[in-house]
Image (cartoon, rainbow, N blue to C red):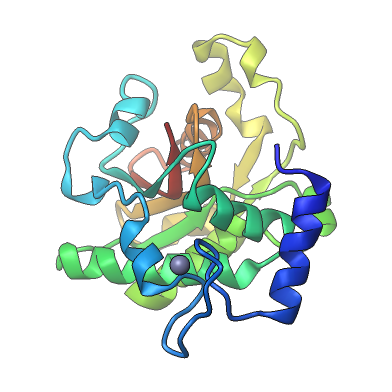
Length: 236
Ligand SMILES: [Zn+2]
């Protein structure tokens, strides 16, 4: 775990030298944001959006039906993805989450010209948690994706009702039946069109349990819709 001292030091470095690379700490050019071009080229990209049957898709097989699933980066205990996510979460840099969404959205659009969803839905934070943290990083990531792809961010139509879930204690069947009590989804989503396709997004996918519950909540309200999943990172 990163020490308190190094967190404070990291914060101070950025306070006095705001334009330093989050990877190597060298100065950034005006054309660079957050990472220098060298660190940007070394990020652990998954390229999952080009790979059917990738690790994120496999993670949900037999759990919830998804059309596609992909993550931008691999997440490991050490490394640049961790630096980026910690900066968002512990230094409150919500613009970085939006920036990553924009960069990833631009990449997706370029690689998949037929990319289309009726809307993007971020996994919601419980309102009490949201008040405490000030923002939902998944929502900010969705904003960036939306800006790059012109797909509407409909995250305001979903809500987390329960702060901490007890789903780990339950078996899969009862968890499915219980999803309504964790997330609620506004029926307005059904007005999109006959059988909409939504992109559900989160910051990190680890076990996939939260995303599974959220997807099941959406399917409970809209059984005919298609779902895909995207995240900033996939934990390996
Ligand atoms: Zn760098």
